[in-house]
Amino acid sequence: MPEVCGNMTGVIADILVQKDDKVEIGQDVMILESMKMHIPIQSDYDGMVKEIMVSKGDVIKAGEVLLVIE
Image (tube, rainbow, N blue to C red):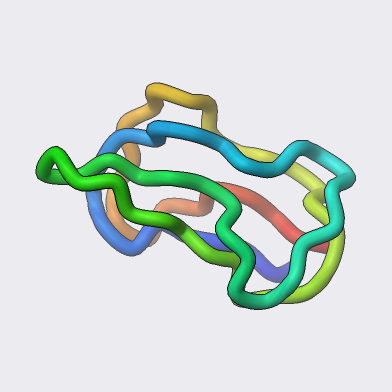
């Protein structure tokens, strides 16, 4: 299954999609706060959000799986 991963360490500031939402390549799915900057995390895949692996406020590491697309 395709996965969207974090590209750097930071805190999940916002989750812009919900389970079963349709997403497209390049669509912002989350906002990561790192070094006091808000960085959009985009989907690399078209499909439906199957599972969201993090919650708002979670600290993530680079490469961590944030959501799964079906």
